[in-house]
Image 1: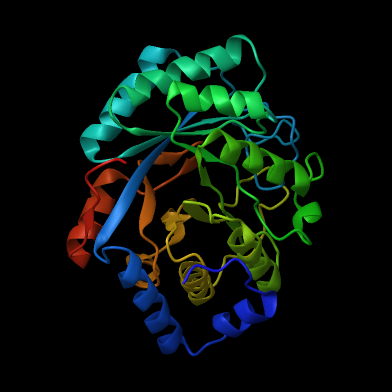
Image 2: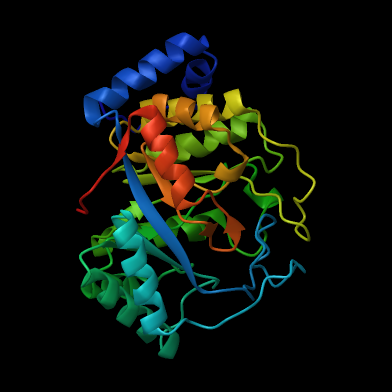
Length: 317
């Protein structure tokens, strides 16, 4: 049953369930809603990199930090379409385009993005964008151009948010999500763990996501990639079992959402990823780079799928 009234106390009780029982419950929910051996595969490309005015403490693209990221304006259409076609040949059904902006501005930049959306959609792929804050009108124009999904993460709990970002409020993030919904675009929304937050903050994020009606169609769970030059470069790694527990809770409370293993997979063993799939994760970001951070390559992901007797979903929606 899909619920939107999960409390933090209920999520904590789930999270602390003995591990075999938690995994069984998550796997049962997963099998009721998805093919347990199938993983959806997305590819993410940074179409405009660096120089973002936001101060997100985890982000190497913030203009506030010296991380060595090379800035570039919106990539030419032929470059983006070549990347999309390559991703499609490798088996990705969704192509996500990210731009390091606080908010997308009307004019030349947005017109270029709309043209990229049309081009990728014409390839028969699901198109996802993450461009920062969106107005209601901009969301409608993206929808008209063929945008299938919009990513706008909440990052963490409302209570911990101010420790990570001061240049944009939680409410502003929620407003963008409302604008995306009004336009009829599906929502991709999740967060990051490993930023110094506690268990209650991680579960507070899941509570906030589960209160959305409908739930986000895609829920990316990122494990912090510690980048030199950012305020979080010395944070401690996330305990693998804690991360798997979080995936299991996400699956139980958002039974029909795709739960995506996103950033941080290069720090996950095959065994940890396998446990995440058992816990209900059923989507990954593919390719050797996620925006500006490393990611396992095609060869490794295909070998892992073969080892587990699993496969990638072959068709886009």
